[in-house]
Image (cartoon, rainbow, N blue to C red; front, side, top):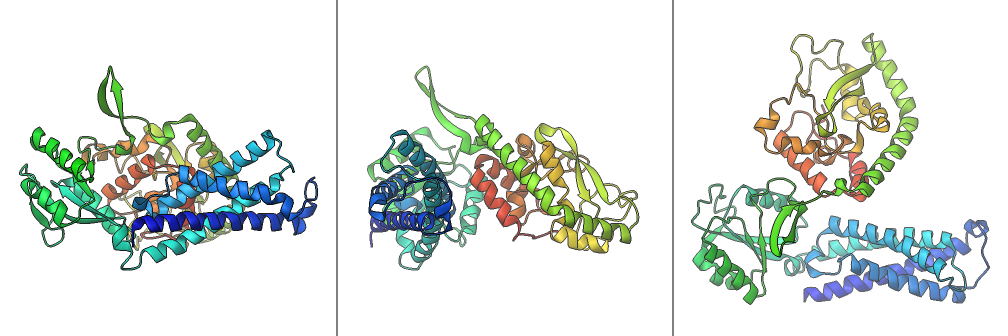
Length: 465
């Protein structure tokens, strides 16, 4: 079946969910205990029908504005979920503002609009989960995946391939790669990722493998060769992509602009460079820190008492860490180690079955209980709820020279949790992979991503020593 049919099904499904959300919101507002809340004129279902129809239609239009109705993104569940959440939020605020400004009659209930937004979000995300599961079935998923051919091979191509391999709902199917003759030093073994030929074979290969996208990983070939490849893709209606190998950091910030009429590709701003985003993240941090301090107070008190009973001495432990822009600060933790644990060997990573650990310390570290006092660091503005994990200066003094782009992670405040942690990269794990996760987070930051990471933190505790 044509992928365009599934796009139409997704639009129809979203419209049905929008209508159901409107019905549900009406029932909740006017036929439950909420009917006694606020001031409004009693109206029949028929009188409210116009509002419900207008709201359902405009919601689907807003979702379309978020570019979720395209065959190339149907399998990208995380991306679609974030766009739906953003679209529903925009629609809720906009629909309420427009109806109030235009003074529509009968006047609309603000509680109804908020209920409509909340139920729409739940219903849309719920139905999309089922729809995605349906699309992933054999016989359907193949038609939706884009078949990609790599031209050349390098570290960036390998990184992209690893990322796609980890994504079981991947929207791309890499058919193979062709050699450019410029080295291809990091090329994979042919049995894992087949080499299909050379540049001269591209035209034959795109037809034989029904290629939808050509990804150029190696730009060291002759300019005429690249121009011919781009022209071929234009003729055959194939997407032409280039991995910007000369930009190793924050590639999502690459934009094309013109200077004196000449096209120039450059790195521009990251999401957290925007003032509005900075204040939005800070507001979430303050609210989360206050709630976290209040809710965690009994837990902190109980485990502090257990630490003191097992190892008499200070129960809180302060440790120097690097913060935003490399400015040091003191992180606060419940002590999980013996007193003077680093007096003999000095600073070192915590490892599995670390003999310096207290008995209660192992449990605290597994469940992140020792880190609860860091809500105070968040409230003070030294940390964020979500961000790159702060590291100890004495352990990582030389990393900025050894690991590419290490210092780029200090572009934002460190976090109590982060994208690396929920992917199992914490403690004594590969620092290079952790840096890649941190950079990905900075490039793709959103409030919705922060909320997702905070939720995932409760379920991901790999390598928690």
